[in-house]
Image 1 (cartoon, rainbow, N blue to C red):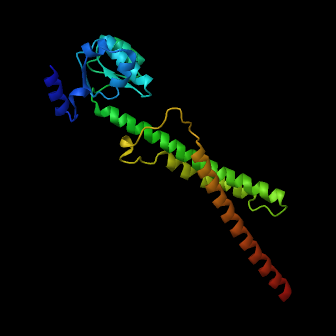
Image 2 (image 1 turned 90 degrees about the vertical axis):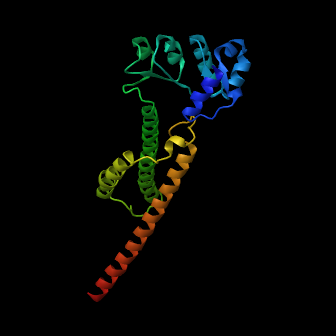
Image 3 (image 1 turned 120 degrees about the vertical axis):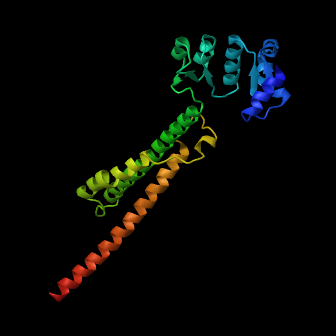
Length: 240
């Protein structure tokens, strides 16, 4: 049975060592600590009972892994419910399995899972890019108004310009960021920490740097144009 499991694993592209293949009988003899040491290293489990499946899921979760499990039978229901992402087969799966799962593969194709992961990461990264862009422009506009008030200088942006920025300049670019295609190797990238918030310290730093560049560029252009305007106006008055 062990040789057959190794053969099946190799036929689907899994490189396994004898120490990475565990049976249900072996799992029954492990203590909790031994199980936590063995499951992250294992690549193949065979002849496992519903109890073994549940213990594998719990062990991986204890060691900090995000667990996804696929199943189609009644005996998979408990482990599917416990897993972070329970995936049931839509065509051949039982009703109990489907009710316990978080996601149902209507085509029973495992490649659909990869497509779902890719789409989920794409949505997350696009939302983060959208938030970065919106915060950068908003902070820059508010900072320009605040600086002009504090320093008692002419406001670089009037009400119409602010309205133009919010409707025309922010809208279409932000929408395009929301539907930007994801990188091809996004699935192979390291999974992010599930406890990591949407707005991280790195994102805030990028927002502040972008806003600083916008503020500096706007003030430079404004000062340059104001100087030229007054010079032209003064020459015109002199000629008159």
